[in-house]
Amino acid sequence: MTRTSFVILFTLFLSSYLVKGQILTGPKVGLNLSTMHFDEKQYTRDYETVWRPGFSGGWVFNYSASKSTVWSFHGELYYSTKGRTIQKRGLDYVKNVTRFHNIDMPAMFRGTFQLGSLKWYLNAGPALSYWVYGNGQISSSELDEGKVGTVNYHYDFTKYDTPRPEERDYPIANGIIEVPNANRLQVGLSFGGGFEFPVLEDQIVQLDFRYNMGHTNIGEKEDNFFGLNKYKENFEGSNRNIEISLAFLLDYNTQLRKKGRSTSKVK
Image 1 (cartoon, rainbow, N blue to C red):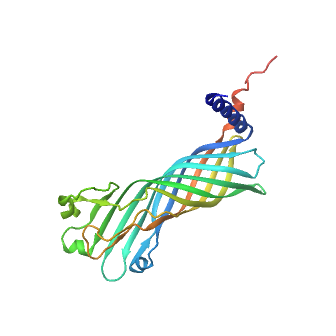
Image 2 (cartoon, one colour):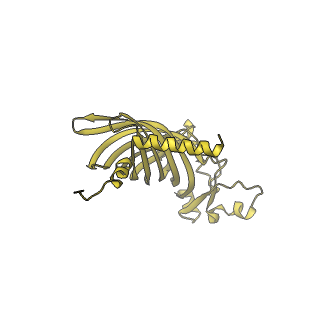
Image 3 (cartoon, rainbow, N blue to C red):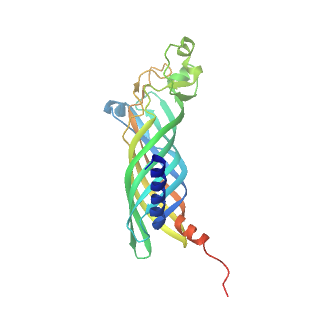
């Protein structure tokens, strides 16, 4: 058997298997609160990390062997904003507000249960997150003393091979932060639960509550941050966030079956 024939047969087998089950798919939108967990304990004693609001939006896919099956596979692909607000403890005023833009892809196993007329579920599994872009804003008493004021910046993932003196001498005007050895592809764990509300025979609304726990540090510790003496940046930390979202899902298999029906009666 040729490789092409094998791929065709496998695709047909997989398609026939999926059609026999239940496929729910559709868009989702959500809100989240995020922060960062740092490895270095001394850093958390020197700086306070405050939760920061964000949002998400993307696509959901859920597959189960049948409508009566408890267990299913649940996957998602969506865009999200995460972040952190870092404030220095003590008398020196420093406030660094950061926003990360990510593409997230959790792959979870779900158990769905019935409680009277209410249908609820629990799910957990690994999650990949790709760091697309990042930007922030920092203000401090040190910047005020230098009559610089609040500084807006964005992250650069390019590792410079040669020094750029003009940028090193004037980092404030530059507005660029280099992330040392940035881990743009991050691994984590997602788990939570929610409720399902049937709208029509082939439409479901899901209300989901979730905790996303990153395990990959986004980078390394960075002592130099715009040349400030009273603030030390730290990328040796992982993203953490709690999320609430709504998903509107269509039963893909029911939609296919409806296409073959005739709306006129045969006499």
